[in-house]
Image (cartoon, rainbow, N blue to C red):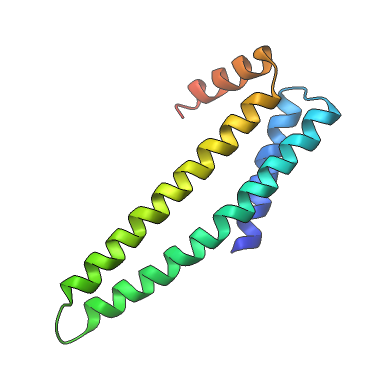
Amino acid sequence: TPEDAEARAQSAAKWMVRKLDATDAQQRRIEGIVDESIQQLLPLHEQHRLHHTQLLDALSGSTVDRAEIERLRQLEIGIADAASRQLLDATMGLFEVLTADQRSRFLDHLHERHL
């Protein structure tokens, strides 16, 4: 659910703030970046769900409408592109908030987890 996604993102942000010894000011900025990112990603997720339903409907008919399926594919590429841009923007925002040492420790954590 959207609420679950928001809770998970906030939980990850709180972990990052704690693990990286972020200042109160950094914490507020990070929480703001996460909140804004979630608000921008949720409508994309809803559009994706709608397209998924439409795709299943298109495939369930007595004939296959290739043009409709192609239209949905193109819409999904747009959603993937928008989501990718938003996630990169949020990531860059987070990295701008962190000090060089904090960024290094965060990247070490990602490497340890193979992310």
